[in-house]
Length: 439
Image 1 (cartoon, rainbow, N blue to C red):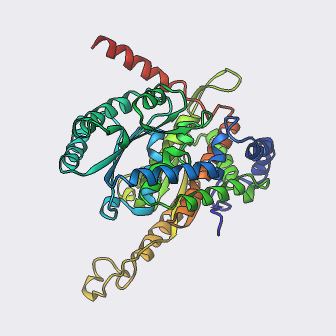
Image 2 (cartoon, rainbow, N blue to C red):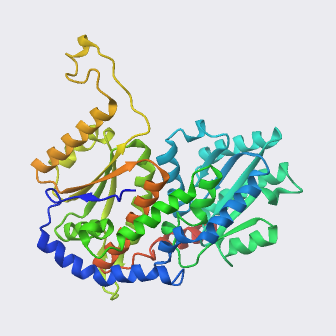
């Protein structure tokens, strides 16, 4: 199996001497993360151990087997942010945007309190239950007290209770921290419980029960996903930066940040990876955007993570990217081999419309657009790196997600901020609850 690497030497905008200095700076952090494999879930780097946890895999399979025995037609995943973005990223990467067209069991993600969206899904659930079918509800909240999640859970639990009053609890799986408020409620209500290790933060939890239960339920090969993540961990603890994609990427982002490139754009040349972009955006923003550094000094540090989709966004933001301020560092992400390809017919009379595309494949055209974009960036001194995912398989998606999570750990170290907390997120929650008290 291949290791996903970065191509940066001619386009990264940072000289080798500076990169060697960054490698020396990162050496203790690389060793610290490497040693975490021997410490299970005992420290803040705990998430790197999730893909190696064989007992977790066994628990997931047993839970999926028990819930599938109820013959459900749908899975409703209720969670927001780190509780659903990783799952959606993997699902779309492997199954595309129209994943529900390819599965006997449909899946619906309920995150924010949008009345229209929640009502649409609620009506579907109501219909399934009213016609004698079963559904599984997977409520996910690390803290167990997330406002949007609990509000949505109440709606769907009420529907479930109205149709299955005597055994509704069989159809609910609660994924949360042990002894959280939700955990205790689930225990009292006899819901199935799946634990999130306490030292694993929500945005790092995709390889925990948060992601593995719904993905396994939808027949994603979670062993392959975790095997890829294991490979990613080994690559990301290599001492030489050139062979360590997470350390290299983090160093480039940090150095460009210090040069004034405060925006890091992830330019994904695959529509199926758009939810991966949303997952990475949260991972980066919530981990790196900090008011204070580790020395408790006010720094207001933050790399703004933006997401672009190729070739769609070349027709919306390319003008800005190639003519606007020099404040952006870009990571181009592409897939070497798609699951299918489309061949154009040979219409000679169409040659006057767009020359040289007759009888060519979509892959050929997309690659030409990607390479043309890179050349335009290079000619205008817009720094970038390129990452190529060999294929959209569970193995390589798992590998790349682990690389990106460890990248953010290294980036936090280089920028001297804590990549594991999110104190300012609590401020809006506090204000929201104060307002709700007055409603």
